[in-house]
Length: 516
Figure (tube, rainbow, N blue to C red):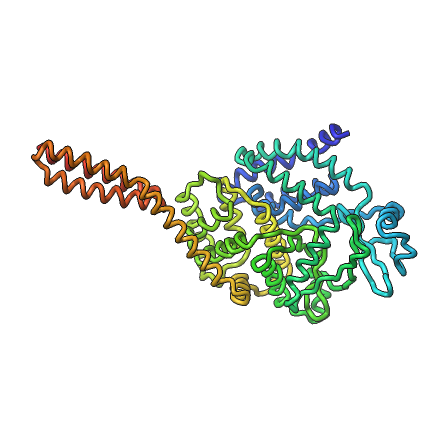
């Protein structure tokens, strides 16, 4: 059966893989400029439709790909970010046994449970119910989903690594870890006890903020297969007509969405990574309601501060600091060429912005990061991939509302309100000292070689007094240039190399002058 499924999936994927290969080559060659964007989006739509036709695991994989700026061109990311997890619900008679096995007879546990689902997703479905007079939502794992997931994961593991190597040989270094990360992610999403823990942690972190509401969980009615929580109705965040009827300030709404999600990202260790419109509603007072905490990202404190440093460096148009932050985040291959990447970032900033930082949009920031990641063989750690997914989806919400919005202003407000700028600059200073210490240590390592060089020249001068002053002066100058160039080599290979060659040239000229 796995073989038959593999052949079926392979036949379905061949046309979209061929199109992706062609588009990726063109995107990298032209740095995203002058491309046929309609064609790119049309091909991305073909991937989206293929994922839907192949079922739950492939829908999840399409969502996962929408966070991979190291694999897909920007238009693909934007189109795949629209891939919402919507699948027809299973019949209730298939779901009933799961509920009754885990928490007991429905008639005894609930006042009422609607057999018609509110929504269906790839891994589960949602039903509305009443428990002790309170309205609740019951999320139930899809019947037989574990077997289907395991079978399709085996198929993906056979096809995708081969396909991605065909798309770009550089991806051969990263595709296996990416596939393992995806497998871990989907297994985690199938365990509702983990989603329960995620929800509780985020709810606790966001408690001080009055612009966001997160449902309460009913622990005694929740298991690995079932999650029961408070029912909080609201208006879908992209339902512009309904929001306008309620008099909701949509400009403030877009600001609040960015504040809530970027505060999670930059202040706390855990963030909601799937903010598509189906997972965000709006109360009558304009506050946000968040649902579905199955896909989350986690950042340790060190990574979080490095991400803040990256943002500050991009906003302040500082390519060297940008590269330093990217390197510290683990986004660069060990043998990366600093000069090439710095020049690429610098050229991109100059060509794309040409404005004051306050006027830079989040789309431009994301596009810069995505273009850079496509052009160079960068690595993209799992949690940063989820961060990029979250950012891209939120950007889509902003485009839906088409309001006057400046991301950088909101970002600066977050950094100031959460006292993050000071912390970020402290980390930047620490990083600078570490780099200086490493440079000094490397320079001191070659000091014995410089001393040996000077001693040999001194012996040479003692043997031949003629021209000794010229040689002595040349030796001192050559040594000084060599020492300084070795020091500079750590920050700029080109300047360091030129300096070392110059020191040799100076010594050669002096020796020639002495022999005349």
